[in-house]
Length: 174
Ligand SMILES: Cc1cc2nc3c(=O)[nH]c(=O)nc-3n(C[C@H](O)[C@H](O)[C@H](O)COP(=O)(O)O)c2cc1C
Image (cartoon, rainbow, N blue to C red; front, side, top):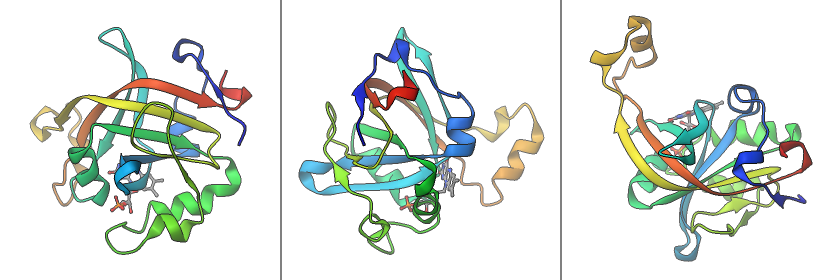
């Protein structure tokens, strides 16, 4: 896809729909080492922290991608046109631990502009991030007790903040 570099301060998106409706791929690892994994995510946010543009993603420790998020200091978020929805569903259902799901998805890995975690050629939006903070959800801090219902296995997400170091996207994101 034809993407252009976008200044994070000029980045335009449907702030909740990009996550909950369109979904994103979270890819972590190092392309140079041929060591990376990806998974679909729908929970997270984009904003400003410590005067830097940042994204927040949440990853359950049971995900294979979690191991890469822990091992490496960069990750990418990629959004795709609607026609790729089936592939995102697949990448969000099967674990990279069990099969070479990136290969099977037919999506093409590409190098990023600024980080070692890769992106995807077919993406209409690529956000490159450098890990800046992490924490774990503490169930004792859930102000709404219903939230605990999202964790029958007590696999509370690890929260990662990533400083946005590059955004490239098609015209609609500018
Ligand atoms: C639409 C959708 C959204 C998802 N959002 C998240 C999320 O925000 N955080 C998370 O830990 N898992 C999320 N998942 C689940 C992972 O994508 C899924 O468990 C995946 O198979 C993990 O792959 P891995 O084991 O290769 O890392 C989501 C799945 C789907 C289909």
